[in-house]
Image (cartoon, rainbow, N blue to C red; front, top):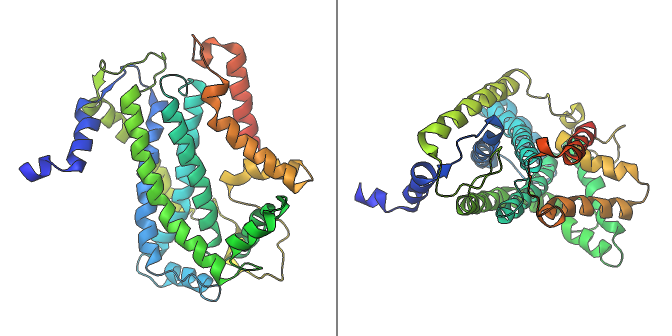
Length: 337
């Protein structure tokens, strides 16, 4: 018992659960951070088991995925839990970010919390894009081809960057191995930054609907909000289980059940739903370089919100009609894309 009390895990859990004080007016919109952490851990665990059977070569990638689905014991659950877990992970993170924007949780003293969270979101997008190619289906291959080809539009360095990512003059075994290696490594980096993200929250105090900063006062996180978080997690896990067991392809595309063929282009190249806002930006302009620039500006605006919008006395959108209207319009356009 004395050895356990000195471990880092015990120290973190003790600080997070017992000593951390939380505002007394939390609502259910503040539970999505906990749900996001659950799906991140689920992605890491299922990804590790899937890597035992996956073969990162263009000749074997598709067949290894099919073998996992049909021959590996409970391989179908691992595959569909990993695929649908990514969608639930993004969905929970998007709700988490939307709550942060509406309640202005990015303002002082939580700028570091917002910066770290935005960086996690960027790494999530990169990781999901890398993983989308691994099944080596038609939509995976051509989606990766279209997105990586955007780099060729960069003046002077575009061709060299594309050659570096592809590992040659076209997508090949080298590309697949690089994507697989990075896809396996980046979730652990996301987990590390998520711990920093939580440390910043403990340093500055949690946001709340009243936007009052509470660091040393408030209710203990355990048992009040742990029970509330697990209640929300139970609902999400039931929906997740229904998707995995009964509708495993609800977020997927039928063309991904056809092995990649570089000589046959799909009628419609459509990325996963969590990439659609970025895809809509690319489709809205005819020039690839301009589209890439607009995507970079989109990420820059999200990252720099604490610097763009600051020094508000009233932070919550409910009491700022223009801000609330702008936020809801942004959410509507994001979903519409």
